[in-house]
Length: 411
Image (cartoon, rainbow, N blue to C red):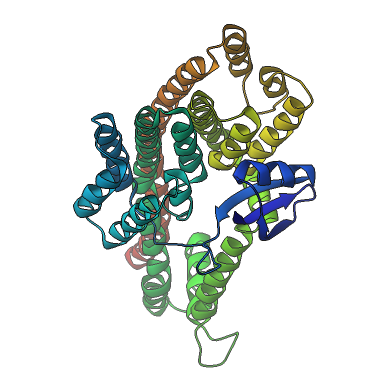
């Protein structure tokens, strides 16, 4: 079989290519022997020589597909008929095309996991590995149920985080736009009126002069004649944001960005708890499905979403390869709390590591929910304080000169 792969070397460089291997596991082992950590592995289509790709599918639709496929397989419906039925029920055209291709591959004798692997933007490495393990163990329906639950948990957590951040971001954006709108369009005109009424020798308050200076610079043409400076300020801001986001997508930039996030007090707590929950649930599902420990660690690391913690799991995998228990390797981590290693050690001793890790995942899911709810209740009054402070600054800048002018007129 031919595979296309992307991997990262020890010095952080990203490599990619195509090679022949007996299966995905053999390719993972070959890359690790070369000192490279696999980031993604996809089977190459024999007909086109390129990896098949498709548009992303909504997580809600994928969860529904997974749960329905599990139910139909449990009921004894043949796999090809399951896929044909689900293809007809799919809402999006993209997902219909994906299911149709998978059904065609299955009819031609290709395993379901291999058929899913041709669509890496729809079915993740975790999804594909668990399906392959389910097929090998004859428990595909149970594995699909686990996948559906795992996807629902992940989707729910992402929605809660997104919901908690939507209101603060919207309020902050509106405040910034209103603030600069007043500085650029209102304050300069008001300052001119005050100066005309009180005379050119009038000394305006320092905050008024500061806001007027900002407004005059933004509307002036000091950089290029006849072109307002605000054009270059906005253009520079957009360009800086574009290149920053582009840099963050590189392996080095992503590692630095994720490392920075783990230094911010509250953000660090949220990211760590989410990563531990994701690790526990994903690793538990993979090992329960019969995926080998090293391959499960490799797949789980890529599914966590933070490169710093992923690197810690890579180091843990090296220690496990040398004969250490995973619990001892995890204990060396800077971001995994001791309770995770202790619970995992108990699971290794009793042979129930997958069940214990599921309890760890549920515990940290509750911790994240409580933390997000707490942050939501704190962020709203903080935004009100920031908004009030900016409005107060503008009010003081406007009302101060008016009060001074009234006193002068009254005197």
